Image (cartoon, rainbow, N blue to C red; front, side, top):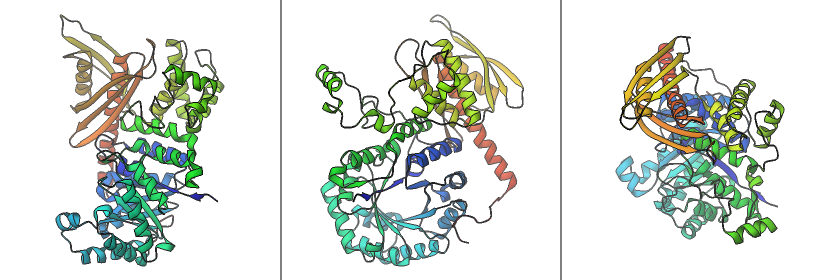
Length: 525
C-alpha cells in the first residue's frame, strides 16, 4: 500500500517574502483558492506578526479556505503566537507553526541564547500555543548545521509539550542529498516520541539541491515536505512543489508513495503564481517551463510522433496543459468559451466571467484565433486585479527620432470623474507614466519594467510586467494587449490601483482602530 506524503505549501509565506515576489491581498486570495483546488494538505498563509498587512491577509485566507489546514508562522514568542492565533480565528483547520534556531552560529550571534535557554523556550512556546490550537508544528531553524543530538533533544521537548509535527529545515541550502537523508534517518530514530508525530523537511535551493534533498529525506522516513509553487522563496528559492509531486507520481514504483495533489491543476497554479508575483519562469524549468514538453531535434520529434513515451515520461495533460480541441475566435459563443476554461482548469465567478468573455470577444476581433495562453492571461489578469481606483479611458502618444515624446491620457476615477493630462518624457512609455503619476498625485519608483509576448506571431498579445515602490511599499502590475504601449499602460495602472487600494485600506483600518473578531473555528481562547 502506498504511503501518503503530506504536502505543506509555503508559497504565500516563504515564497511571497522573497525579493520581488510580493503579492497584494486579492492576488494572495486567488493563489490560496488555487492551492486549495490543487489539493495541498497544509497551506502556510503568512507570518502574522511580521506586519498588520500580513496578519490581515492570513485572516482573510483562513476565512476563505476550507479544504486544507491553514498555518500561520510565529517565532517562539508569545506575542507572535498571539498574532497567529488572532489571524487564524476563522480557520476550519488551523495550525500554529513555531520556529526557533538551533545551530551554534544562530544561537550565539542572532539569538544570543545558550542551548539550555533554547531548549526551554522551544518547549514553553509550544505549551503556550497548545492553549489555543491543537495543531502545533515546531521548526528547528538551521537544523542541518545544528548538532544532531541537540536537535533530537529540542524536538523531543517540543513533542512532549504537545507539538504534532517537527520540522527539520536546511535553512541555507547547505546539505548534500546523501548526508541529508542520513541526518533525517538519525533524527527519526533518536528523537523521543517521534513514533507518534510527523517529521517534516524544509529545503532551500542555494546549491540547486532542494528537491534532491527533500527526496532523500522521504526515502529516510520524512512524512511531510515543505515546498512552493515554481520553487520561489528566499535567495535561490525552496523545493519546487511541482517537481516533488511529479517525481513521486512518475516514480511511484520506486517510492511506493503518492500525494493527494491533483496534478492536472499544477500548470494553472504555476501560471497564476508567476502572474501574481511578476516572476517569469525560465523556459527550461522542469515540469512547467515552456520547453518542458517541446521537441526541436528531428530524431526527438519523430520519436514522440510515433510513440510519445520515447522522449516523454509524463504527458502534458497530466499537469493540466490541454491539447487544443476547440478553436476559439470571434464567432465563438459563451458556452464554447466556458468549456475551454473548464478544460484548462480555470474558473471564474459570474462577474469575472462576464468581464473576461467581453475581453475575449474584443481580442478575437483583433486576432484570427485566440490561444489558450491568451485566455489564461485574460482570466488570471481579471481574477487577481485589485479594485480599479483609476480606469483607462483613452490614450495617445507622439514620438519620433528627431522629437521628444509626449503622452496624453485620460483616466476615470471610481467616483466617476474624468482626468486628462499630457506629459513629456524620454520615450512614449516614460511620457505616459509621468502623466499617470501627475493625475494620481504620487510618483512611485519604477523598479521593473518587462515586456514579453504571450504567443508567437505578429498578432500576439504583448504582456507587460511592472513593479513599483512608494514609501517602503512594493506593488506588482500586469497588462495584456495586442498593442505593447497599451499593455504597458494597463500594467502600470494595475500596480497603481494595487497601491491605491492598499493605502486606502490601511487608512480605513487605522481610522476604525482595532477590529478584532470573536473566536471561531478550532482556535481556543
